[in-house]
Image: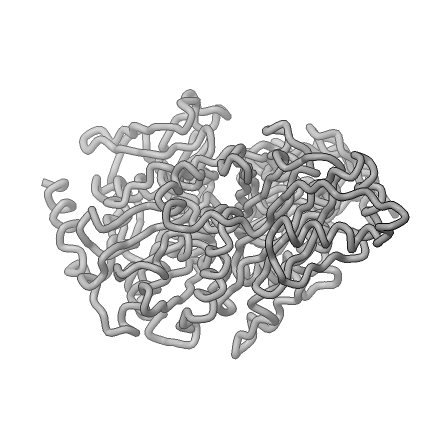
Amino acid sequence: MKHKISFLPDNLEAVAMDGEDILAVLTSTGLKINASCGGAGTCARCKLILEKGKIEGGGRERLDQDEVEAGYFLACKASAVSDLVVRIPDASRQNDLFESDEGATSLAALEDSLKFWLIDMPVKKVQLKLPKPNLTDSVDDLRRLKRVFAIKIASDKEILADLDLVRSLAKAIRDADFLVTVSYIETASSIEIIRVEAGDTTKDHFAVAVDVGTTTIGASLIDLVQEREVASLSSYNGQANFGDDVISRIIFAAKPNGLTKLKDAVVVTISGLITGLLEKSGRTAGDISAIFLAGNTIMTHLLLGIDPKYIREEPYIPTAVDFPWMKAADLNLDILGHARAFVFPSVASYVGGDVVAGVVANRISSGDKLTLYIDVGTNGEIVLGNSDWLMACSCSAGPAFEGGGVKDGMKAAEGAIEKVEIDEESLEARVSVIGGVKPSGICGSGLIDLLAELFLKRVVDQRGKIDPALKGPRIRENGGGLEYIVAFGSETASGRDIVIGEADIDNLLRAKAAVFAGVTMLLESMSLNPESIDEILIAGSFGRYLNVEKIQIIGMLFETEAGKVRYVGNGSLSGATLAALSKQVISEAEKVAERMTYLELSADPKFMDAYISALFLPHTDVELFPSVMERFKAAGT
Ligand code: FES
């Protein structure tokens, strides 16, 4: 039996096959909702509201009584028994393009790096006036073009052109009376003509830089003539409907059609971002000459349609870590037509092109300072080194700092609480919100602030448990645990209280402990102590106002001089952006991926010990955090 399902408020319809779960039906429409556990029925985030019709199942035992009464059910645990009308509540939705507020990703913020790298774009445009053929000069169009082109760019490298280009050549040459613009890509050994356009289009020359994150995908449109970023957007990765972290995505990829679904989902997200960037900037798809993509190894495999299965099985082998330039159309990013794609090379199974891009963008591989680079994404990647050596490891931090796995967590965008202060006496919270609007949730920087404040003001203990003896309007029981109300419903955008509960705190503790344990292992492997590090760079999608002191209070990072630590925003997107402008950045990325040594932590029992010890605030060994504990004691007197 088939049933029709209407999804509101989008007014999209889809047909459910017998027994098909409603999450799968919804996903087939292109809609995205939270589904952290990938449909296992454990995260309770895929909530929908039944407005009409009958369902089987629904996972209501995982919902609050008031939610059940309001018609809520879990999409992954329900199937249709009749035609249905269901509503997607805002809290479940994941489909907006948003202007991220991560800071330090725009070209203006990369000014220092830009001075360092030679501006010499990998994809260029040049205008040519070809001599018209006649009976004494009857050479074919392609050789005519190559002859003039080779002189213009003064190169004796082999010049290549594929069949698609040759098919379009005769018309392009004659449409503007033998005046053409040639787009080309230069590698070490050859030059490939990728497009011939009629007339002079040298001013319409753009690239897209993309950070292919597990949870969030960020993209920027770069004007290659003006050397400036003209638009920037982010979106949740559409693969989130199939699980939160890279492991659940690998598991999903093994299901029938799983790999195709994951590939399609990320391609749809990136294509949506490109459409958004073009709309925002008033440009068209034809203006885009190239796209530069940086992602972790699993995201890269899935984007390219490569099965990531063996990454998860000992000895954890990726199928490939470096890739030739390819046609964007081969990735199904058909919006770009002729454009070429560069995918950043990875290092190993769990250290990917995103971290390579960040290391190059922040000149760690080309500088003398011993630098610790921590990229806190869903998959935390940590690098230690300088121009002499580079060592990397990876730890599964989970998406908590990107707003996943935390009830009122959200991306760093308008409406996100980015800073929190708690009054010691009254336990009242003072928050600042991105965009100065009513709050909708809490982004990574806000969550770090909040956790640090809750600890310093003794609302939570070292285990992250809320003190049951505390009384007041901000603390209440909810579903067997306690929660702290960060903003009351009367002050929020949705009219609902914004809260942090003990389960949320547990997820934050797990994320910070994974990072701390990774850093500890990396230092130990090189027999170094924290004092030997000259500089610490934190990358990620926390939000513009990441407070590095609070990072140390929660014990994500060891205590160190504040001046040594710097937040660098989205390092992966910075690297992808710089690659659009400089061939040097691309060749440096290739060298970095080759020479970075990977430290595999999953097989090391010492990592688990370090992780468990770090699950406390700030740590089980408080002697590691003397200043934090001094502040903690002072706050309690
Ligand atoms: Fe439905 Fe997690 S409970 S996706």
